[in-house]
Image 1 (tube, rainbow, N blue to C red):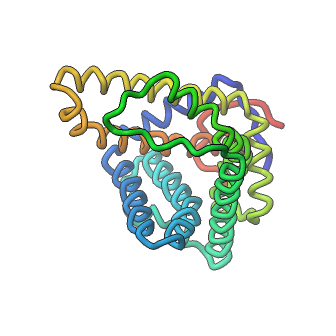
Image 2 (cartoon, helix red, strand yellow; image 1 turned 90 degrees about the vertical axis):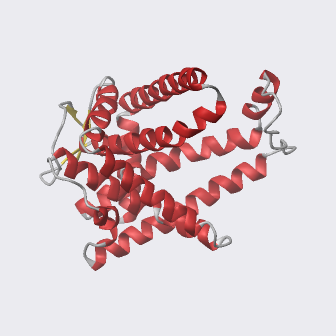
Length: 265
């Protein structure tokens, strides 16, 4: 397996492919994402342990959504069982995915611990009826705990971005998958940056449209009716695009459906 370097503009192509593929199977992709979120919500009812289990399931769920995207790319309807495909491989694959999940949970707990350690005076939760002022926003963004957590979370995110697919589809060990994933994200940092900025732009445009729609329909009450489906669709669309970031970042004889060309590392 070789790292595949792509131009920065490929990041925007990943966004477009994610949106295009989502609209091929919108109900299936959003339904699978809803199933995962519903599972997380149920598990969160278990004190402490439920949160840890939910975090540990994220890599397997990510792989399941990537597998669903591959099904949609190949013109097939992703079945609900696709969501748990990361836990339905060989015993070695299942074990490695569970190990990866445990590492992810540990990584997120580390991020939380660092954020808590560096947090100064806690910022009280905003009152739903209070006005959100520029001072409140600046105070939240300037919180040292938040900034420290983001600094630690970024390398964790890079390490786990491609790891589930490397473990399940290419038989890479959990430790090596984290290293390869980090190096792939770093090697294609230009494309990943454009990918991130592209999605930020899409979410901002959708947010603006939703605000205008809410005002047209009669205010916040009307907006709440369409807000949750819109957020669900956007989150599902984003997760659909993750598959393409993986496909274009590695060159392998077992690689699923290439989408772009670039330079080999």
